Image 1 (cartoon, rainbow, N blue to C red):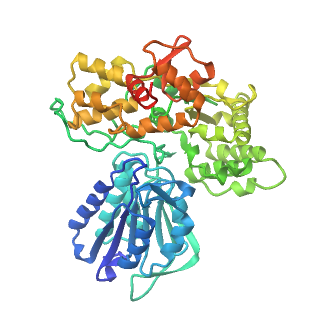
Image 2: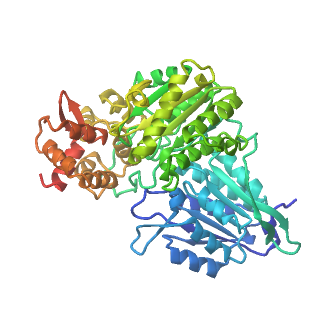
Image 3: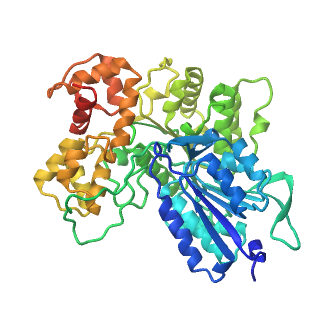
Length: 593
């Protein structure tokens, strides 16, 4: 029996809008669209669907396409920035954020539109706004990895083209994510108005005042974890194939290479342990009232380690929530009260608990007390099992000292309470940050001087060799030494290089020559560091001193620690030297040293 309301019209028009601005991370949009086309080509009723594609979409292009195509389904693939909006392109190909309100107003004018799929990070904000006038809207409640986004599209359209309903297609998309072994099946959310089908058309009438979020059923969402990935909107360097100067020998055994961006998936063979760090973290997360503090520069593997800690917590039947504080928008960070309310609301949502927060957010008590009561009396007592709570990128709060002081003091108070209160022993905290803590915190109210500290170092030579071998590359010792010197064991830089070598996109000789330039795949990573330095002349001048000499050099202490937290230098005694030759060569050139 055909349950798809779209099958009642001669042709269902699907408008695919794709945008990957030049200043954002490279996405696999072409692969996603190719999979959608492949699903349609296999459909029995493929003649009843029409795909229309628009690439490098600008705001004006989107408006014109809706008018020209009059679609029944709009599928957007690209980047999302939460409350900031979806990233379209401006006239020169740079990112232009379009707000939820603007998108809602635009889609409300579409005559035939019945479903909008926003396959972009943190797009639940836009989905909620659009759902006031469109029957079905799908968004993402956190960052979504490339693989998860692709798997969701495949499952969704396979079901849709087979005549399934939107609700069923949504569930099939979530199942596809889980079947691929990706712990992000709770990320997609379906917003739906109360629906009453019109008798002679696929256009769905509904009460616009009623909007519901369709949850993934228990059979699909039985895992306790609700994980946020930490891929920032402009974080990862592009991995575009570059014509090879010469092929690199690879072993005959095949390997599925992950894209070298974001966190390393749980099932990936490319995650390299750095003993005894993992074992120490796995042991600590089992302990009542545990607190783990992971500090490392960006792209050094914090998120990948964190993912494995939470996976270990789930294995021991704990509940687990990963919350990236970078997803808190400016409105949330406008006051302590709004931030703590958002903090509690996100955790409640990720745990799929009944809405109880407003009950605790009343009365004359301060925000800290309301938050504490909610955690103790609602979350921890209701769960009845340990809760592993990972707060990723807490650096975001360093920009808001008034909020940071109270919030970090609250975390410290909860950690101390766990020593005497059995309820609080069920809270196990994992905190990650990149920067040194420069905001003034009372030594007795800071979570940064208690618990188990984890400093993630670069990969050593043996670990580097292990990663090379896992890419099935056969490199002589001399080539390995050149890679070690060039990249200093930096996990992301090393994975990106090995990815291109394994695919034969570059010979090692050409990679060594082009690596310290903005022409190649390291360009975005290097430019980000340069732009950050240009905002602080003291750091800029300090780094000039460091790269000017081949020997370790002593610089002002604060500058040395800041450059170390950025991942640009490493300490050698009280002196510092560049982390790797890549940084030395690039900054010597760009800073005119």
